[in-house]
Image (tube, rainbow, N blue to C red; front, side):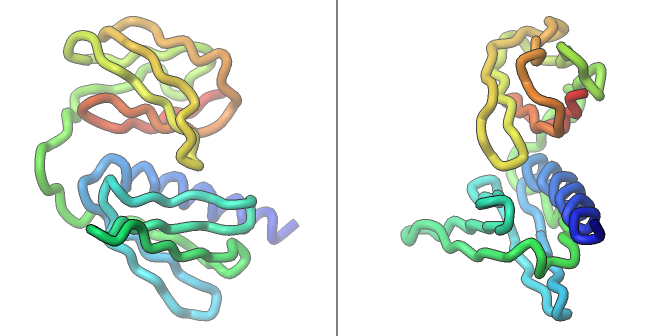
Length: 164
């Protein structure tokens, strides 16, 4: 039971950190291991973090001209994961777009969208679960999605969404 609780806390910490990663241009992610060591990654939007077989956390860092460098961590070996925005390089995101209501039951509205936009909804493992064309203040139906935490990506920002 203690191990399940620890995994739950780890997944929640990771999920929140992932939101920072997707919203920021550059994020410092540190994986703190049970043996006292730490692995730090400076991540950008082209990098990926996902779960493999529900037991392994995979960190893929894109390396120019080479492909991706992958590190794998057994979840039982991870004490915690921290994420910090390091700098916001490039275009600034439109922070005036927001999702309402949140948590969501069957539908949500993206307030302050500029015209018609493609909206992509991702599960925390990086899977695209839904894509829609939306106009600001128009309800987006998500009744077909399972309960959980999702990331909603617009052209200008990434928002966290909790589906109840």
